[in-house]
Length: 82
Image 1: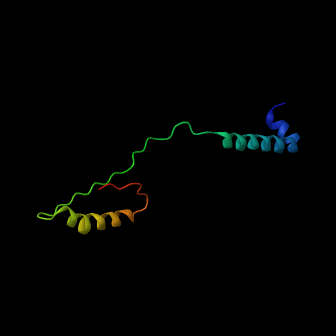
Image 2 (image 1 turned 45 degrees about the vertical axis):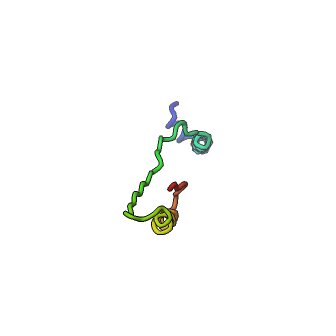
Image 3 (image 1 turned 60 degrees about the vertical axis):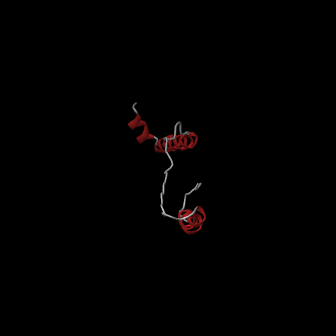
């Protein structure tokens, strides 16, 4: 007696066996862990500006602060250094 013949003679047994296989698959999938995550480097943005003849206070107030505010509005920015 092979599996096909057994399934035809006892359809309830075939359905129960299929449900058990699916149940073990779902349980196994829930406990399946991820071994390694891919190495992802965070993106870096570098902005360089020049303002010939200006002192550091003017550069900070007129260039650096507006740039920091604009860049800080982007989602996902974690730190900003000036």
